[in-house]
Image (cartoon, rainbow over all chains, first blue to last red; front, side, top):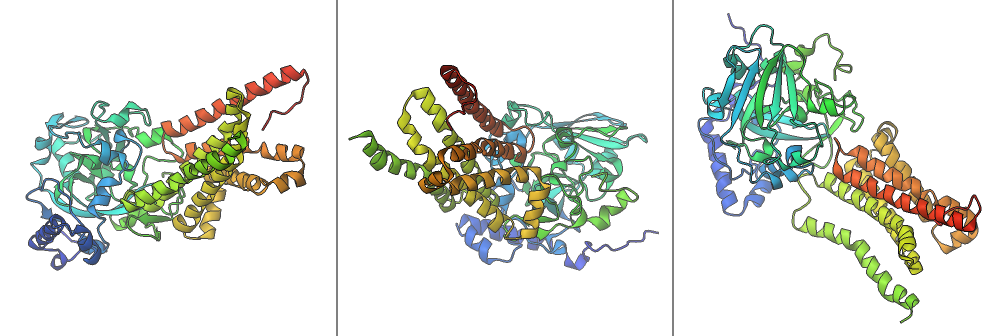
Length: 322
Length: 210
């Protein structure tokens, strides 16, 4: 018998915004933006009425239990989400990615799946994504630099994808790699980091329902500066764990090397769970500035997703395994 | 027009305007919506980078004098140094008043626990002392020799500023390395100058011109 235990972040089915209403809001906003009153609408409308962009709409997205209503926090405006980015492949300035990723053509795209899997191979983007049901998921996003956003992602649970690859029993970690192509990613011409960008998760972290392979934001295809065409989102970890523009997923027996950990092992651990009590050499992690707000707000353990993920780390000293 | 009048009535007012240009630029960015989605961070970084730029510019004056042989250039040094301090004050104010919103407890913890902030504060305190003793009256009161000795601390402030910038950036970034490289170049020019002077005077222990 399946016993469903309700969690604090769960939302009653009655509270889920019907898609028609959700779409209606989007249409309203599109119209408002076209009419040139987007700014005015953004300032007088309720927080959920953040502006949408001009990207390509994705069809057939299902709602999930992670809605803006269940989170109870305002969405970060689309312009902020798409112009304030850390994506060093396109430059180290916050506005560099949106400035220099304009010519980046994310498709066609393919992803190499290898390591401890039964079905290795090179998967086209379509092969990778289309067998799955896309979901809308509103997550908090907390950067290690002590700023945060609330972003409505569109994506596929990572667990579903990994199951299709046929993970072998001795697969204990999942390693990810970003595209390494200085021609297309000009920021890679300087060695800010040891390219390609690498990230990794423990298998149980990857299989956690929160882990998402995102292909869109705000119901639209992912803009290049946000990691097009496919990226990871792990909302209980600092943002740099959510690796962008993924070209390789490898299931491994050993813990994979990860970029920021290689660059500064004393600053960035493999786990990098959001932890307000573990102070960072550069930033106190006790508070964060939500983009669009003036005063800082307290940072929540696991970015507020403790009920979903805290059990993954039972018996671990998270000050040691940061 | 004599050189004195040229400096006093033309070049100095011009320099004032140039030194205030970054603030005009900031106003323009604010007006055109160019302060990014995180204006507090942007403002803070913008002011900090200009503080460091002005400090390096002020430190360029003396080497430039020895390279060009134009002694009159020294008359701009104090103005440039004070503008460096002016931008440091704005930078610090944006950190205290906007970023931390006068949370003195958190500010103190930052200074004590975060090395790059400790280093930056050392630089700021030095510049405050130099700014406070920058008047003719203070030079007289301290005596030229003591004043010179005190103002040698600007070398420490320059190094602190560059180190602060380098440590603040994540990863190995080109910009702070370029600032530090320029500072090293300036110090090497001064050192070469010092060696030349020492050889000419044929005695040991003469301090370089500050």
